[in-house]
Image 1 (cartoon, rainbow, N blue to C red):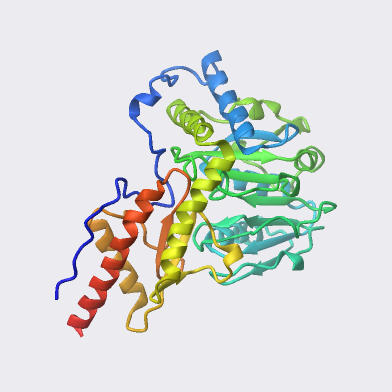
Image 2 (cartoon, helix red, strand yellow):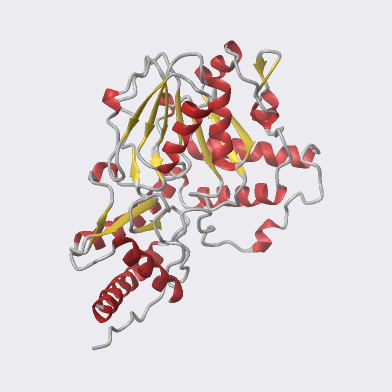
Length: 384
């Protein structure tokens, strides 16, 4: 008996975890005011870059005494700037429960060769922050983009910590409640929850982080794109939009458009609510079925952006091949693009549920997921 395909398709099948879906209202003519062919150092360029910083501050609720800078090389560049510029003053603690966190471990332990304790957890789990020494500098991801596991809150980060907290929040910003008083360095990229274009990162520094930059000089040389001080003082220009290298003014305009949309849908609360609703649609779907489950083992740590799923049906013979076949079938049908698990993650699917994704599209995609699952089970049986 042929398996019947669903009648309804998502209006937008883009569920990639980065670059993520554009805002639902996006049209190219929204970028018509971009300062193209103009210097980013001209008044118009400076004004737009400064607006991107201050509107980010307003939408995220970043404290007035925190510094926000636009930096090169997306979230990766922002994290690298912090690691290379601030670490080494004291021992570090590296926390990793997925591939990007593991990448920062490599930087600190193998490249910078800093004395560090490494705490890890398997995919689907998270390190207990109660066991972390926050008198060291602590580096971690807030939301594990490749594992679908997030820090539930900042309650276990002490206010009187002696070390810095360096937080890669690229798939958390604009979708999860970040406790700014517990975060000294926070990074993200435009391409995630706001659906912006890639290549630009955001670096947010607390007064404690600024103090570290002005009181400590690393033993190693710093490339130009990592330097945040001049004459022992913070280079304030970076945090007014005077970028270290040339930014794309088209990408800046795109980010400004996304920020404006974020305000239109209810600001941070509205953006978080959209991500929550998208993720819950998938969670409810999984809870009603015995062949698929959330990769996150604790409900309190489930991500509302990078929702990672695993197939649990006993009939599946080769988990990796099966998951790839399901993702390929969904893409061939044009109903869910780029939903395969990250290459280093356990076999399964990863569905982006950030605020730029419409809940109606998530709901329309899920019957297709079930259809693809059943079709691949049938194909596996036929091949046996």
